[in-house]
Image (spheres, rainbow, N blue to C red):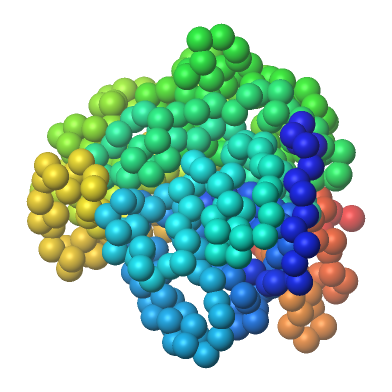
Length: 442
Ligand code: SF4
């Protein structure tokens, strides 16, 4: 699949590595590449942390929660290290300030932009031989799933939202060469993959860093031509770069799912300005109207932050009202937590009390639960494909859990298990706030 030369295999006794991911799909994609490198230099992956010789953590810098969980884990590993050799490695979108705090607690830190330096760094711990390695986008990943693949198309971000660390941890936007992306997806489809999720901090700005070459709408068209029966999604879009051309292309992309994630973050213009989001509420609403007009079946999810610096009750109410009006069927709600090193940490005070953040979060969650149930009710009676993710058994009944193309969770009770990683045609029979229940279409 990769055009680069195969990596040399390190002749050492098989050691085991365990991967821990604290983050989003982009971190999963990073981890898939990191796992591949470790495998290629002689490590074997284990799901059992206690038997690992190397523990690799891929973490996200956007959320303080991830960093707190790492601190907790690190304390346990220090106790393990007193009894046996253990190498610990940290990577992902980790801010310099966190790296500084954690530096002496991990044996290695790998800058995610320089993942290709991993063997050299491991080698420095046990210097045996020289390895030749490709760069980040050339690293063939070890996919987590045999039917759903996360394919990075760009990395980094030029938007500099004041609360976000990504532009500092991943740097400026770099688009992956389209030939490389198409080659990876072609390979995945030939191997029976059913769902391709294109990843990037801002996929809409794909190609804008290059003077020549194709942009995101053209990339989507090219990917669409690679096959006929697969699901195609992309994450994440920035409203500023969601062009009319892209919306038009989306209407003609046959494999594209009826799902779009479009972060709104706040319903107040003043807050959006403090967040440096580059759009106003009027522009965001206009964009949603356009998308709904062109793609009426598309389920739109969003991201919303509550308790951002200086958020007044009035500003919060504006967010709650917009969440109600725009009827997102899903929203990732987060309570703001300040990250050292971000612009917000320098410019503003994290002055909304924790209890207020929690209360506001609960209010938004109530609105979201209602929106979600209302949306799911609109699917009653529809016949759709479900992609089955796992199956468990209660008595004689199999509980098949999967996703619909619009990312809604589906539960199908059967007397025989449905095939995991395959499409099954189902009819929606019951709507819940968390998803829908369905029956297999005979
Ligand atoms: S668009 Fe904003 S929130 Fe998203 S990665 Fe870029 S800076 Fe971060």
